Amino acid sequence: MTTIYTLESKLQYWLFVFVMPFLAFVTAGGLIWIWASGSDVADAATWGFFALWVCAILWGCYQQSTMPHTIEVTDTGTIRFVGTFRTSVIAPSDVISVKGSGLFVEVRHIGGKILLLQQFTGFHEFLTDLKRVNSNVAMRGV
Image (cartoon, rainbow, N blue to C red; front, side):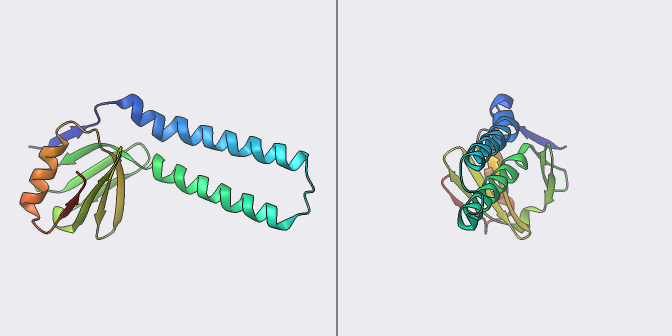
């Protein structure tokens, strides 16, 4: 039997995954357009700053858009983090740590990390079962 944990608020998920990245792009594009139309465009240091700033915005948008909205634990124990743009499948033994901070939880595993919202139904049951299966998981702030 597959156990499924879903987010309590789909609205909050859509705000983080679609609305906020869209607003970040529009704001960044508008600010760059305003700045470029009213300044000396030959200033390389300023363009470099804006390039780094846009890269930071893109990185944040990428992280937000890959957040899962569903956690599925299969009969074999495999954990699937299902998102709109990415699905990650990991074994419970691959999980290294689970760290909560504010609205978000970061699940570190051997292949990287997964950022997710903390408001999943039955999330504490999921964490309890994960700790039971993999006693080496470090849990902080959850």
